[in-house]
Image (cartoon, rainbow, N blue to C red; front, side, top):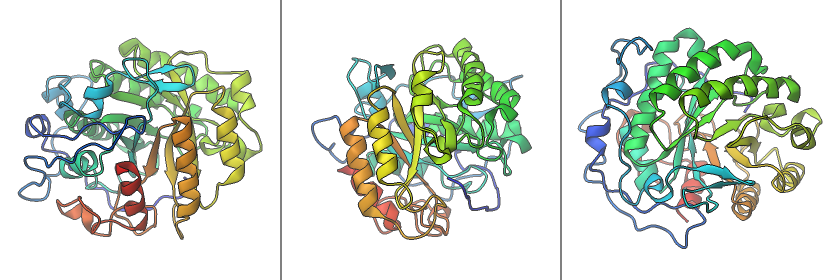
Length: 385
């Protein structure tokens, strides 16, 4: 996406971690490859007694166990019936994402907005709602590198990512850790930051089976050769600590397989990244991207493992009227191809991409449709269906 709202940063509210969620009852996993919707289950306690606390303690660093993830003592056991319990460790098999039994699986979920823009929207209550009420399979944690993000406070933003991973893991959700490069668009300009970040977080969460790594959100203004070079330098850093998790590689032209910059998928097919267990990302916004982009995905999916780590129901600006007909056509295509997707964004901003009504993230109730915008009601229904 090309434009983001800017709000005051206050720290991600994710204080109630593994202890509070370990006993949480969750419904059955709900990938669209399964034979029917899961039974709804109400968590034992899905709301906190007050607004979540802001994390304002010492920063996490590689030098000591100061983050909430470190304090949690390593990986958690996924609750019975949750997506992670049902599907286990994921891997790429052919052009599909497959579960522990080698069966293709389509993951459906939501992407956060930037952690600095909407600091209260990823918290134990919202993630519990995503899992138990929406019946989603995963959350994408969008950590901007620029625009007031990681580069301003590497330890602080690393801590926020760690906390989100721990909380989502306790619910049995998969997590996509998104190194959210947008401006500048050449990921090589953030190569050292990427190596440092992924070395730390991959080592910290290496024992988990539910984390996927997205190494560059939307490369733009850079050729495929440059993106490929970046990927082939960052992936080994992840693999040194975590040899088995799936890595998502951004594509040219805002992760459009080059379409937004006059190219197409053949440049990736002809010169793929030299690494195993990877997928290539594709992003679309339904009111702007229609037949050309859908034809590209349908064609590319015959040769490349694809993952839609971000899409919207409006224009590429993230705002304006929702085109739910185009969005429905898109999601029907992705279902037929078993391509996973995350919608932008799990937030309560003024733009039409936000799934929650204004002010929702200041409270503790994230369930049902009363708190949702038009796009929120659409995607919740789609994921639950």
